[in-house]
Length: 130
Image (tube, rainbow, N blue to C red; front, top):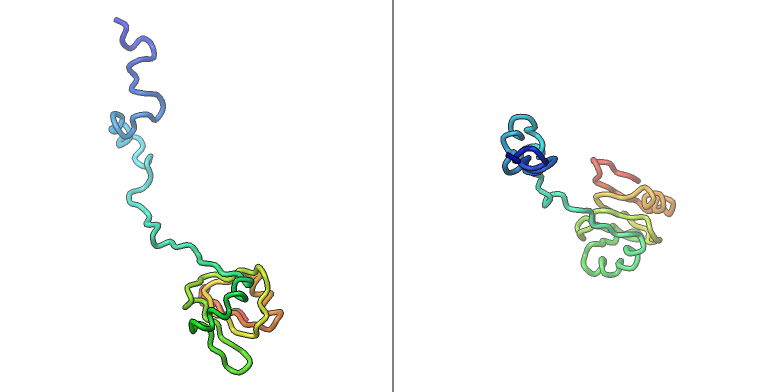
């Protein structure tokens, strides 16, 4: 008559078996143990595609030849949103007088460019930073 006297016949210790033979216990006492119903699609959460000021200065001629830069007199308008970039980072230097259009920009990049007289237009919550 040994069964049940020792550590046997318990169906596992802790949370073992909650998706199997202890499922009725989960339904009765801990309905949210495995999280809420549904899932989050991670396909729509695309990460930012960044470009730094250093990369912008080296790729300026390529952007000009591809049509993402429009020149008017001494200044130029660089549309990085159309080029596929979503965030401007402040690493490096960019000294070409222009207006840069991008979805997001870091404070460091905006401060660097404003000190040189370059305008940054962002779409972040409808704000325009100059």
